[in-house]
Image 1 (cartoon, chains in turn orange, brown):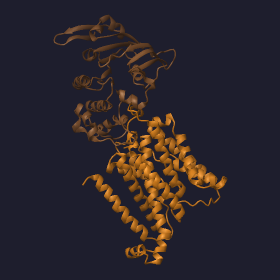
Image 2 (cartoon, chains in turn brown, yellow; image 1 turned 120 degrees about the vertical axis):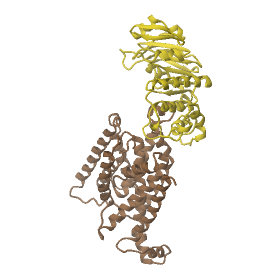
Image 3 (tube, one colour; image 1 turned 30 degrees about the vertical axis):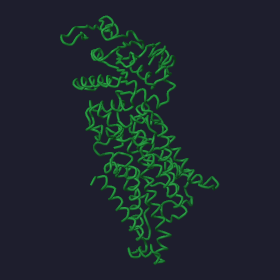
Image 4 (tube, one colour; image 1 turned 90 degrees about the vertical axis):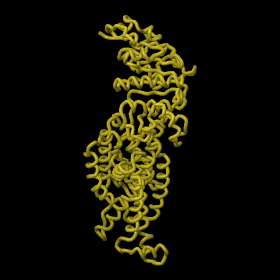
Length: 320
Length: 251
């Protein structure tokens, strides 16, 4: 069997097993038999626990993981930089900041947070995209990190001593939130799969694309819009969860190769799996309390990034 | 293809291309030679639409080059530049498929069969699924030529195609270019550093200096010691090598 096929199989089997564990475990442990009965509608208590608490959370972490990993892979193709992830470049924290400011100063209107997250992410990219920054891969990352820290700092400034009432993370996520997430996520991921070939075109420099009549700027703008939509969808629902967009595509390139038409579907599945594992572990290790997925991802992601950059042969100019 | 009174500069005091008028010989091999800074690469960028003249006009098939949209231009003009490279892993066949893009919509999938003939023409059929970065310099150059051929252009531009290649590959490449030109009846425009290579391969030569065309004609017409010495600012001799012909040497 091809390495690629095995990688896909492992992720799919992993997803199924982790999903079962996620739905079975919590303050009340359910056996596989309970789960089966619940699916058939024969166990009212279990149905209640699963439907109201575990299922929305399960779906939310799957779709968010997929969205974050796809956004990471796409943004890496746009910037030709394997570290270019929306959570590192300030796209998600820009969204977080605007959602917060909107909550403090704006009246409510439909989809307010989503729109604000989109504008915040777009603003971060607009500040980032500059000839000087794009010339050297590391400049992009340094400027992105600076932007990110600025947004995080501003957010802290505005939340000094007050409770914003904004719920972040997967804890207590409700069905309406999950449904919004599902709609944006499914549309976004469908478009990501559809536009995957465009990510491949960007492996040629702009001048060469121009010589074969491919509009590089249009492609970049479309893919970046998609990156911001995917990131904003996640930010609105659960705030920033870092590093999934770097870790999953990096491992994906090793396992299924550099073709975005295989890498993006793999990243979606892999991201879903990773975030589900992280959320489930976070939920279970300190019962009845929990550790947020964002915290765990920061702890895993930091060392992974150090390992990725310090590895031999990494040069950052190419999506390695 | 024709240039009419073309001017181009980045800085008004220092014109890079200065009142340049000339006609590219159709279906022939044209080489552009001249010292560094003569404007060879600028001229190529103007002819391929990468740069736009400050004044004057460039016509392709009696149509202004500026009026062609990107896709149309890509089916008439193909470029093999010195700086061709990829930013991420790509297979040889994926690179060549990019040359077929002008014939398809942006999302269309291009089949392996469609690019097979172009890989065949540069003898890279066996390398189709290899990562381009794993190929030798000479093989990579042939991949870029296959991509350009896939555009089925009327005009094929090559900017110093032999620069990074060893002598054997240079000879092979030149033979390949001659063969492709003869098979497809394309117009081939080369920028060459090596005067002798230019003399050997070309039907016509343009000699540039300071952004102007100082001489043009068949190779033997340009094998002129005083002309070449003046153009390159050094003493150049034309000697006769038995079994080869005339050869330009610098002393």
